[in-house]
Each structure stands twice: as structure tokens, then as C-alpha cells.
Image (tube, rainbow, N blue to C red; front, side):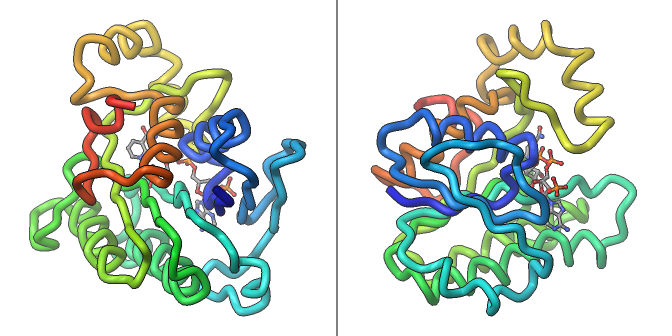
Length: 219
Ligand SMILES: NC(=O)c1ccc[n+]([C@@H]2O[C@H](COP(=O)([O-])OP(=O)(O)OC[C@H]3O[C@@H](n4cnc5c(N)ncnc54)[C@H](OP(=O)(O)O)[C@@H]3O)[C@@H](O)[C@H]2O)c1
């Protein structure tokens, strides 16, 4: 598979990139981000892009791909609904709409989160916005789209969150998280498991469009 990766500099994206570079099912990775990953690999090519609502300047480089792993995303903590919607819904749908037009045979995988609200009407702002984002992604004319809803994700292999407070929690709780990952797969996964599951689902499909933590941990 030839895949495009958004958010490769983030915690989930770094995990996904690592698995893509190691996995023989992935022939090449195009990372699209606002800064370089700092990695070099024969399978990796990067585009540093500055307007995540408009891809017209790089459209010709975004065609001919089998999969997209969309790991770009932010925490809603301390953010207004308008700003969170812009960074979550607007950016994701702008990229996905462009990719669906250029790659009708593409499988699109979006990383959302446990508790995402598919009704778009619940009490939690972040869950409503993610729910609307998921729902509209599922309407686009991709070959298939899958929504990954991990709960906690333990970063492995030296991977770090871009969000300082998230990273601090993961460092402090590392021993407990390893244990939770073994005994409570409903609530905990790892960057390695998420990346590996993305590749398998893009390649082989999955019976349901929404994957919870336990589904992700099956691979
Ligand atoms: N971490 C978890 O435990 C966890 C659990 C469940 C779900 N998730 C979801 O997984 C997704 C990724 O989370 P993460 O933990 O990997 O986050 P992260 O470490 O903070 O990384 C965020 C990524 O998104 C990019 N990004 C953020 N704002 C951007 C913008 N305005 N324009 C372009 N790129 C932007 C960042 O690029 P820069 O490097 O340039 O900042 C980075 O690549 C999020 O949707 C999150 O809700 C995370």
C-alpha cells in the first residue's frame, strides 16, 4: 500500500509512522505536516504544508494513494467550541474531501476517541464535534472509512506527545498503563497497537466502521 499520513509529528502519528516504516505491507509513506518529522527512511517522503484548509497547491502530489491515516488532532482542554471545531472538523474534512476526490479507491482512517458522540447532541463539546466529524467522513466517497476510537494510548519506543500535560501524565503513569493494557484492553492501547491496527484495517478491512480500543487491540 501507498499511504498518506497526517499528524506524523504527534504521539499517535509517530507510532503509526514507525509501524508503517517497519511493515512490509506499506510500500511508501507520504507525511503531510506543518513541520518535518526529522526522520529519514527510504519509504518516507514529506510535504511541509502551511494551509490545512486548502490543498490546491499540493493536489498533484496527493493522488495515487491506497490509504490515509489521519492522526492530526488536538485536545479540547481549555479551547472554545469554535476553535476546537475548526481544528477538528474543518481541517479533517478539508483534507478528506480533497483526498476522496483524488483517490476514490482510498481507505481513510481517522483517529477520534472513546466516548465520541455519534448523535452530535450530547453534553460533551469535544464528543459532539468528533461525532459530527466521524459522521461526515463516513459520507465521503472513499472505498471505505474507519473511525478509530482509542481510550488511553500508551506511547512506546521513545514516542512523546506534543501536548506537555498529556506527556507528563503518560510518564508518571507508565507502570500502571502497562498493567492496564494487559488487564483492561477496553481502556488502554499503545501507539504500536494503534499503528499496527491501522495498517491491517486499511489492507484487509473490518466488519464495522467504528473500532473501539478492544477492536484495535485484536491486531
Ligand atoms: N494521546 C492519547 O492518549 C489519545 C487518546 C485518544 C484519542 N487521541 C486522539 O488522537 C489524535 C492525535 O492525538 P496525539 O496524542 O497524537 O496528539 P499530539 O501528540 O498533540 O499531536 C498532534 C498532531 O497534530 C498536529 N497538529 C495539531 N494542530 C495542528 C494544526 N493546526 N495544523 C496542522 N497540524 C496540527 C501536530 O503537528 P505539530 O507537531 O506541528 O504540532 C501533531 O502532528 C487526536 O485527535 C486525539 O484526540 C489521542
